[in-house]
Length: 201
Image 1 (cartoon, rainbow, N blue to C red):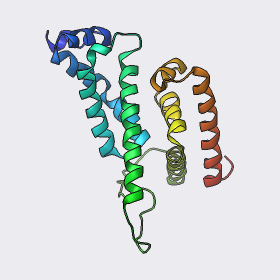
Image 2: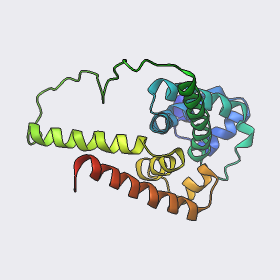
Image 3: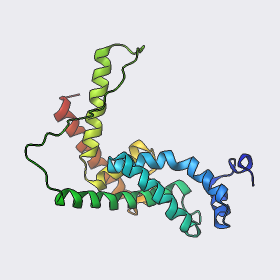
């Protein structure tokens, strides 16, 4: 089956081809979903390199377990479940490493994004407006990162990836009511955090 033909197939058809050992079909699934999955893994772990490893491991696991995918949920939902589980494992490893790694009290830590960013000419309203938007974006990211994993997961999946409540419920393996409750609390925590950082919006 050629790439031109295979690219128009839906995920379920591609997964069926994968179960027959079709690696081209699997490559199509990887291309179709890797960016979204990388975004989820990065939002959960906060480390780009770890997120890349997680997505790679997720696709390896998916290839090995492709027979488990029967289409009860969307392929993207099934893959997101794998990525969330691997991200949780990675977070636990990071927490253990942080506890075991000694550090100096005299060591200085960079605050915020220390990378130098280019600032090309723009038609946006003003430099002040850009600074305010950047400040709000940074505050939002910091506040989401500060959430506990269970609250961060729901806000990433529902608000950032725009999954339905049903999909989030499937990915996290909890009831929809639990998803809604966690999401309400996560949004409230983020709102409170942003107000503390930036003042009343």
